[in-house]
Structures are given as C-alpha cells and as structure tokens.
Amino acid sequence: MCGVAGIYSTKCRIDKTRNLVEETIESQYRRRPDHQAIHTIAGERANLVVGANRLSIIDFSPEANQPMWDNERRYCLVFNGEIYNYVELRKELVALGHSFSTRRDSEVILESFKEWGVRAAERFNGMFAFALFNNSEECLYLFRDRFGVKPIYYFVDHNKLYFASTCRVIARHLRLEPNLDYVARGLRLWVYDYGELSPFVGLKALKPTHYLKAKVKEAGKLETQLNAYYRLDERVDALTDSCTLASTTT
Image: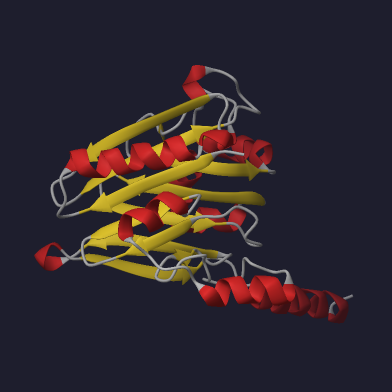
C-alpha cells in the first residue's frame, strides 16, 4: 500500500505547510518501503504542498515515482491503490493518441483525465484514493474508489484543505477531539469505516464513489464541492432498461 498527504492553502506560509506534510509522510513510513517525496506547487491564488509514500509493485523505475506529473505538467498526481483495468485503458488511450513513459497505472490516471476529465473516474475498476491537481485551473480533486477500500481523510476551513491517508498527524496539529460516535459504532458493529465518519471530530473520510473538488473563489476563500462520480442505483436501472429493450426486440 502507498500513502498520500497534502495541504492546499490560500493564506499560509509554504514552509509551515511543508513541515506538516513532511511529518505526515514520515508517519506513513510503513506504507512505503521504496520511495517518498514532497512537491511544492506555488500558484497565483493558492499553494499546494503534496507528498507520497510509494510501494513499488507494477513499475520499479524511478520515472514511476510520485508525485507524478503528466508530460505537459498540467496534472500532478499522488495515488494509493491499484487500477485493475489500467492495461485496457492504456490501450484505448494509445489509440486516441496518448503516449506513456512508464508502465504504471498512475500514469494511466493522468492521461485518462486529460482525455475525459472528471468522468474518467467512472472508467476506473479498482481500489484507490488519490489527489489530482489541475495546475492550469488551480483546482484540486480528491477521489475514492466505489467501495471505500482505500482511505483518505480531509479537513476544510476557510482557506486550507488538509488531506492524508492517515489521521494522526493532522488531528494532533488541529487539536481535534476523538470521535466517540466512530468508536461506539466500531465497538458495537465491528464496522469503523462508514460514510464520512472518522476517528476525530471535524475530520471527514471521503465517501466511497465520491470526489471532492477544491478551488479558490473570491476574497481568497477556498470553496469545496462533494460530488458522486458513480451511482450504483443508476447503473442497475440502466442495465435493467437495456436488458428489457433487448428482450422486446428479439
């Protein structure tokens, strides 16, 4: 497993945010025996400090390390998980004119967003949690897989978005209280990860099948939107309708 962490901020010194991201990445050492790195992206309206802990499985080359940029430096990605159908997606993207320099599924994510935008996530079959930054639009996205296999937690105030694969460092920095509802549910039902519940009050788990979009609006305020990229009920209804139509035309 890998790990991700980052802070997207409109009113905070980069050195302070970088120190916190470094501490978070270091605390996630067990998630990465192979590589860890942190990038600072200074924008006109906001700054992003983002880091990754990497476990090398598919491609062992240094070119596959994270944070990873596409060849146009339009998108930057930190990714935890695996895209099971990345080989098929890669072939489709090559046919559409995309080129690749690694064998990693993370590069497939980058090229998929260049081709299909946010709707690319609908095509991903796998377990994943990742942060994707659109450098040209200064917009940050957090995504989580359909079943919530891979964790990613976040905290938002007026001008900062914190996110990470684990909670401890962020919660200590923000002085968040333990979430007793989270603990009680876990002890009673043996299910801890549910919806947006997290171990700390105010810290949220990104919901499965959802993505969080963060962008700077007027007066330096950071605006976030939570959206679903996949709805099982809609997919079932569509499949039912197609099967019904096929049966009536035969």
